Length: 596
Image (cartoon, rainbow, N blue to C red):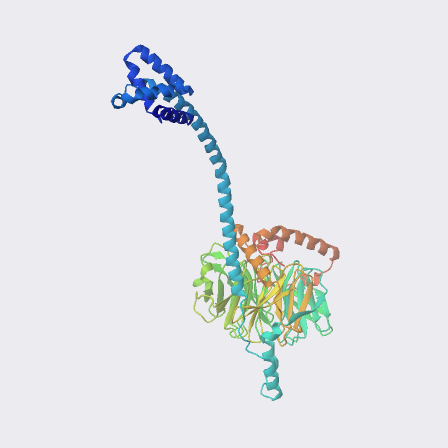
């Protein structure tokens, strides 16, 4: 019974392909090693056992019963015989195992790039999800619930009926409820180019507009009709046209891309007597600054970094007031504004991140380059973003100063703070990249901040809470540049790349629902972040558009200009104190700042 069991065990072990699982074979081989014939027999038996023959296991298992004790002492002698079989099988196994390992390695190598791509995609999805979540949180914070409005319409009407509210209209113009009901009333169409400037006269009855078509139009904006239009005398885009205060609406000051500052004399017969040049910058002149009560004096700023003070009572109207510098480097200017509460002080902004305030009585260019004090958001002081100020304005009482930065936000400073003070408010959501974007206060007490945007919308923020309270589609051409509040009524005039002027008033039946605001804010934020990765200098990404636009404009000008036009203007130049450099000789600074 025992030998049958051994035989069965042997077959089972050989079927499993293992020699070491039957120790009896090794002991049988040792016992037959005494003679050479035994070795031959044992070798033949071993070969049979390797081939799986049934006889080998039975015999070796029978012989092994009496030699179990000897096998432990003679294992080394059996190595020479059994190793032959072991090595041949192990070599085959190793080759097989090696091929399997190579296949596994190849599969692993193929799998690694796939895993890397999957990990990269997962990381990208995670980053995208995190960015989207952060953007959602940011948008939610900018469009959160508004505080309760200060002015209530029904109580105010009741007080007016009782005679206790003498300033009803004044307060109503600064009420949020009216701003939230702004709706487009009509457009004023007469220009054939982008409209770059708007300005109401003191009474608010007329509205002046200037354009890339080199014309200035004075509107009766209520009747939607032009009172007069005339050729400005400029050679390139008209950037600003303003009624001089207390002049009986008879004098308009203008500046343009050609660097000229000109004055137009208007007659009571609704025509322009003539225009004359009173100053000449070596670069484009974007803005003029009026003194609130003076019909004769105003300031101009240019991309040549020069500020001129102009007095129309003088034989030589223009005199150089200051050259704006940072250390020894000139800073081209895009904007200038006089403090309405202290007309000796004015602020400028341009091709760097600093708002500079000067006092005309204390300008000493040998001391701090003549600057009284400078303001800048602290995170932009040493920033590599090359932020520029495209527009700045004082509040109604001169206590606050608002500055709009290209590809950045709008910042509010307290003008009485010391040099280098941080901003006090920040207004987000719009996009200021493609043009020299304007910004303004709205309301009799500067209760709101209003700005255009590259997305073609008009944004109004409540100044105190920094929340967006109104959001309107203001320009089909894609960019809103100019925003002019009416001096006495809840009316807003806007313009941009479209060739018309738009008039807005609070005539909607219900407050705006700000439909689509979050999507527009997200889009503006993404575009700004993407542009910041490869942004090099102000408006470089729009240079091709700039060149093509002006080629079209020049072709248009050649069609309508005839010999003799502007001859009177050339004879009436009154700017011997300023440079007469032509716009073709103004150097590379001229193309750094795009007009509308």
